[in-house]
Image (cartoon, rainbow, N blue to C red; front, side):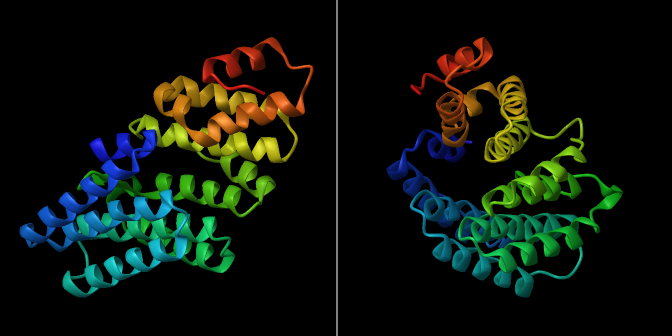
Length: 238
């Protein structure tokens, strides 16, 4: 939780310290799943500094180690492997690697089909299953500059009742950005509104959400009262 908060608020020095402590503790645990979780967490530093290739190397090495050191099967293993693939899909999409993105999404989707009951499960503070794969698929389409595809996929997505509000918020922010790329103001506003409703603190400080609000105000000089109110809530200037 502390790492997630530090990342969202941009405290890069604190993030590095927390990641080092987590890797140290994971090494003492002798648990390969904990080591994989530590490397998954470590990848956020690479994300913060835009080193997507470095992040992919760290995640790929963690996944290979986990595959080699743990037996086939087991819900915890599936959750961790799937989560690593989803994180890799995020880095690949940020690096504009279309083929790599599709590969990791496909691998995660195959693993999600093995989740008991076909519903997202929580292990080691990681949530993985069909819904989370679908959310990452939408986000990847946005990063790969495929807004029409992202909107189409988002329309067919239904959240489980227990999906984390922060994950829902991230999703709505991504979809709002896709609607901006399509020059569809109302759709963008609707999803910013939903993001604020389900995860207000995350949305308020989310750089993409803030930039989306700014872009909307810039593109639509004769902005609506709702848009002006939204921009004021974010505390951004057009």
